[in-house]
Length: 153
Image 1: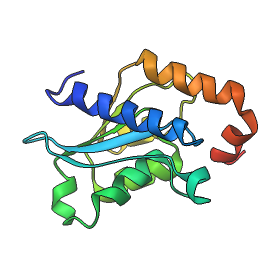
Image 2 (image 1 turned 60 degrees about the horizontal axis):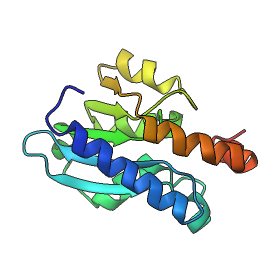
Image 3 (image 1 turned 120 degrees about the horizontal axis):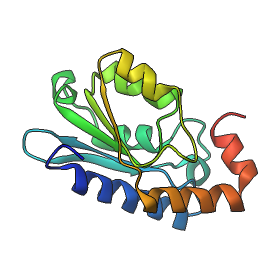
Image 4 (image 1 turned 90 degrees about the vertical axis):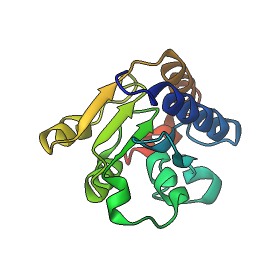
């Protein structure tokens, strides 16, 4: 990891993923951190099953929990997510101009979003976090139909 806040960011994202899993949801968590001072602007986890939502993926939940922020705030942040961001979440990262995305793992799911983010000038760092891989694999093994629903298959 290349940023002084990366360990904290991934720990928070994993805590959120574990919380979502304990609630019966998809174990994907995230947080948004200010790159200048390490302030956690928001944190969240996938809430699709808990709230009967079509769109509350971990990254979207994180942004939702940040509340309304001036557009310029996002321009100096890092979004931490436990899993490679899907197309919808990739779009949100681009829309708000979040320059950096740190991904816990992309073994269980690798979105073309990683490459697309890079092509649009966003930094993507994949940390290959064993905790993230293990919790996601457990969920996919135990609830494959729910996983396929979450990724739109």
